[in-house]
Structure formats: C-alpha cells, structure tokens
Image (cartoon, rainbow, N blue to C red):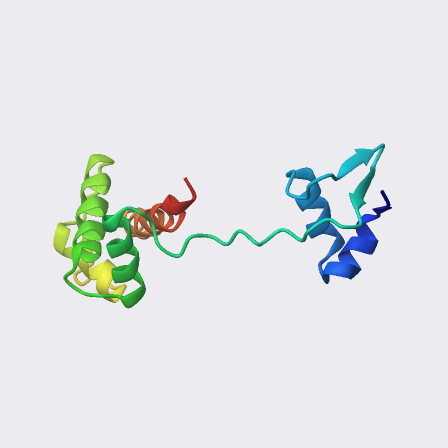
Length: 142
C-alpha cells in the first residue's frame, strides 16, 4: 500500500495541512499512522466529513433563549431572565441599583437618575449581562 504525506493529501482534498494533521490526530482518517513527526496517510483514504456545530440544542428552553437574544425581543423569557438574574446577583454582591435601574441599563444602556449610583455597580451590571449571554452561547458545546 502506498502512503501519502500531509502536504500531498492537503492538495488532493483541497484542505490546509493543519486540517489534515488534525484529522489524523483525532483518528478520523482510517489507516493513518505517525512515524516520528510525519503522518503516513493511505492514498485511498477517504476525506472525513466536517463536523459542524449544532445549530439547535435538544434543550427547548436554550433554543428559545438564544432565539429571543438574537431577535432582541422585549418582554420575553430572555429579557425577563437577564434582568432578574442580573439584579439578584448584583444585589447579593452589595449593589445599590434597583431592578428598574437594572432594566434601564439592559434596555437602553442608560441609568436614569444617577444620584448615589456607583460606577462599579453599572460596570458590574453590564458584566453580568455579558456573562449570561456567554452561558447561552456556550451551553451547546457541553
């Protein structure tokens, strides 16, 4: 049996050499083996299909949260959860912002009345919004 190098397979399959090495390292090319630092790939090896990230999760609530986030839907479960979670987590940490002020920051990126409001509370609020978004975005990867 004849074996090809990573660069030869990359040209044959119209891929980068890095992609071919990754396929080999993950065991996705049948019959490929490494000698020293060189991958040996059978010339009749079949190009693996790409494994794309799932568009939707099996978790219906996660799909709804993601959809409402993308739509910037006001009054939906994403909107209410963002405000409630952020307000409560900030309140636990000693924030003096009211739930109404938290809602205003989320919806309009303004605070309204600023008398006695700490800048740190506003920054912390925005960070909690971003954190919740990251949880939604990365939940499908688990």
